[in-house]
Length: 535
Image (cartoon, rainbow, N blue to C red; front, side, top):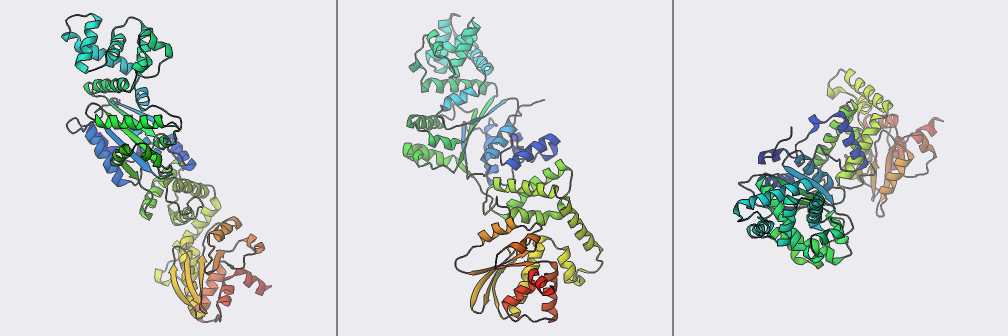
């Protein structure tokens, strides 16, 4: 059974709802992640800790009658793909569960629209009928007559309303014709046919901005008396800047300023505007610099992914949903999965949530659908478990065979460093995690890129080679051997395999073979050179 919201309830708005999700709900959420879209009812909102604290505090105060500061207006701004829709849908999903909260999501499209109309569309006919009944009944004891004119005039006097609005409220509450009630409600919702206003002796200019401001005001007054709240979330606010009609844009700005001037009179409404930073808003400043000044104080940024810790939190949230839905465990392959995600072309230096969620889903699907790879990893783990010697005694060959692709990159970087020093070169810098080594050979500076992947391919190599292009330094690339590489023409790529790496490490440490030059050292790692010698 649904309950009324309390201020304390709002502290749980961003809690992870993982344990309450059905299998179907998990599947739908994962599908949204794969498509790069926000789930209709998100069960998680990872990171954004500072912003979440701000929103929680605002909501707690808003729903606390002793602390309420009146109408709340919040702008949430983010870069493209950073989860603004995910954020606002989380807010909407949570609040929509309570019986005394009317929560609506409104998309501001590129067509001009009216803010007051979109707010009133969020209020049902039933609520407007209840409001009209309440207002009329509230003046009954104060009128000297039950005649309509006496009641209407008292409504005007008590609530400071236009007489035309008072008459419509009276018609809705006391009128005998159901058709006229419906028409009067349509006028109040700003969703009426042209002939409706004639039936109530109204002119179009009677239904101006002030008229509809007072409609919203009187509805919210009724909500306050009945412990009801209206929360309207406007997505894609950035489209307002694209409206061609300057009057429509200015009307939006004027409405928001009008509302912010009257926060006490509109205190049971919470408005959230979600805005992408992808649109140039200089036009907004030119239209109304005063509005921009106010808006700045109401705007909060949704952050990019800013650290490996935040990326890891996102990954873990998705992984546990994926494992539960597909009933599998991927924990032993985490390092390889993470490396593959970071190498996914969707990432490409991006720091937005959409890229990472899509890449994560793509890699998890790959692991789920490639049993041979999983089986191979199991064999490697079994081998590791069966070697019953201390870690200090495990020889290089076993280390290499049991290593993940990330560990192999680190191992190979150390082998190359040792080889460079043997041939008289100097290592200027080494980034093992990135697989990037800068060396000096015969007074020439070179960069060596070390790649380790379980799924080498021509497409993957081509993509990486394009990203390595440098105009200032010579480059060499070490890449895992695969059958098709025999036909490739890259001159600066060394194709290694387990045998060449293990042999190289043994030669460097036992002095069985001395490499006189950098070129000979690279040939020692290249499986193609080994095959030529054997043939």
